[in-house]
Length: 251
Image (tube, rainbow, N blue to C red; front, side, top):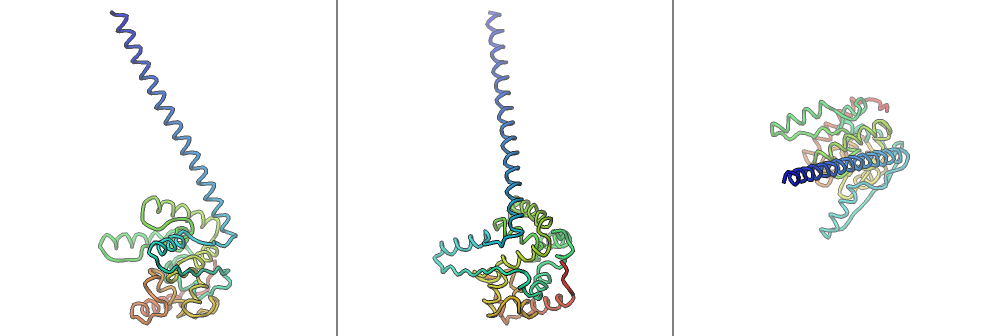
């Protein structure tokens, strides 16, 4: 009888030991898999950022999403996107987007913590305040990520922001930004937007025309750069005033 009890205890210990080994083996495999996944992600993301430092960005996730949305809604899929080197994009537009979207673009390292804090406090009070995302953050999101709000996307946005700040530099970030962002319904980039709104080249924008494009960036599918509404005119005037204080752009 004692022998049977001892044998039963030994079998129970063996089962527990086997179960622990299996659990440990699974955890080790999971850790190895996640580590390999992280290495692959880092390698691919680094390659993408280096690649687009030298090559024009042909399309963005948002362009694809808009095309799918139009297809589902059975709408005409208007699409206009022309890449232009930053040398061919008016300095007025470069100043206008800095004035409108990111006043400290030339001096920060990708993040404007004061603007983030202001936006956070404003949201807590229920006031509608600009989100606090810099041009660098917007570029990272537009080129490499999807739209929407989640901690995962914001974390990846911060990661790609650091990469493009380190690898691209300010001038390339501005170049990609001005060639990729939505500037009208189905209109992407400075050249396409200038042709769409003013029937001219991006190199010849006047300060007020550049301010008109920058004024609609918060919602380019809702507003018109040539609108005479009090809201757009007010934004244009404010942007032009700020532009006058920016001075010479040195990337």
